[in-house]
Length: 212
Ligand SMILES: C[S@@+](CC[C@H](N)C(=O)[O-])C[C@H]1O[C@@H](n2cnc3c(N)ncnc32)[C@H](O)[C@@H]1O
Image 1: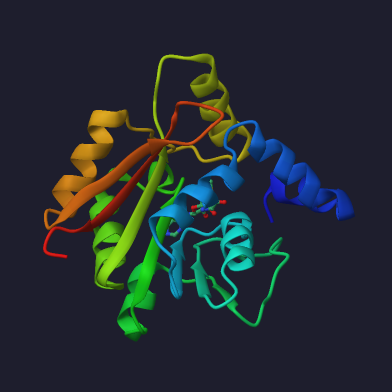
Image 2 (image 1 turned 90 degrees about the vertical axis):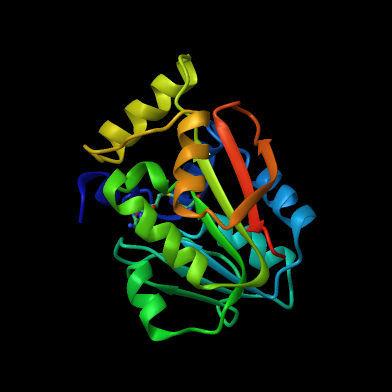
């Protein structure tokens, strides 16, 4: 168990409110969920890099008929999820392992604040896995933290590098993010690009296959 995880667990019942407060400095996840729900009303959701389950909690809570699968490379993904576990499954597997299982396809696939933790050489593969598990007509969401020359970015970089302890964290700017996505997913079009409050660094791209 990492130092940060050990410290967080010692917070006990205050861990969830502390995690929510900390995250809210950077992103309003309720606002992002509202945006996601305005784009689609999915029945099957996959989140690659689901973390503790903060996004899952919002979507599963808002969509009473939806099934959610969250995967992550961390141990115990979804540990802080407070919602209906009958409709939410969390697994510690790589996306290529889940893809190899041939799961039923998902009509919403989310990659939220994950790519900057993935080495550049592995990003295409992760996005290809997302594409392969997306149903025809489905929506793929790539939400990233944009590298900008501002105080918010300095805070985010410091947090990911020194609090989360990811030595290889590597943020893209807007043009680089578009380049990453269009190279990996040439058959997709960006159908929506928006910012998620409270920081302009939060850039969200909604993608769909160009042929429908
Ligand atoms: C900042 S957290 C975001 C968690 C969640 N998406 C959210 O927004 O609350 C980034 C997560 O990406 C996960 N991650 C990093 N590389 C990954 C990979 N190759 N495949 C799946 N998850 C990965 C990390 O373990 C971490 O839980």
